[in-house]
Length: 240
Image 1 (cartoon, rainbow, N blue to C red):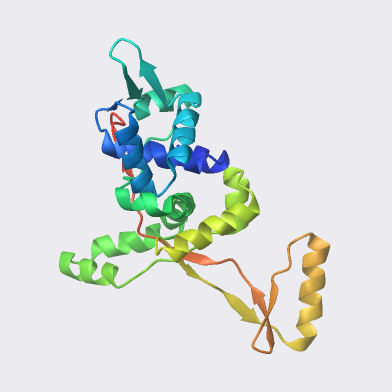
Image 2: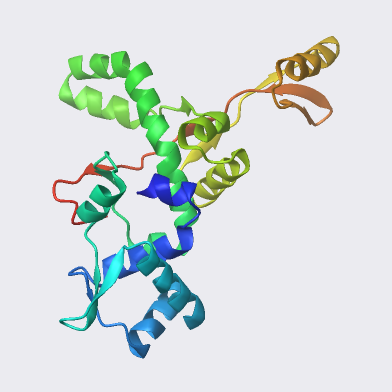
């Protein structure tokens, strides 16, 4: 669901959706002036914006009006998943705190997925070594290690269909709010290597990744990221 939200630029109605899920766990909403004002205060949006996003949720068919009981009903995530034909059951447990920086959270979720894939592929052997250690030794050893993975903006663009500019903004937002850590990688270039590096990128059709820092040129490699964001597998999909 989060991937779809980012791809379709529906972060604002999704933010209201998360708020409603957290505030009305039974999915029954009496949408009156008082409830609209509460949403407005919590999300720091005008009531006009709240009403507009509420209408967008209806248009998305994530909630509907129950004529019989005369209140609005939020669709269950299982029903939405079926309607949109989403396969994955992995879920991130949103909290009210995430409402303050929804784009940062969504960015962290997007980058955490390939991060976990990278770790499963390249750190599998290391984890098996840890398992062979004694219990106390493995715990102490694993807590001291942050495993960084190379996750490029270009890979996010290709895998999720997100524009490169948006992929960059999502990473910056996630890093700004401490949801992921980003480690830059540079290789210092000699003067006679600068021209070759720039022309090589131009010939291959790559974006320029030769940067100038403090009087020297560097070849910027793929950023490494670290995140301890976790997902859980929903059984009935009653939570986010």
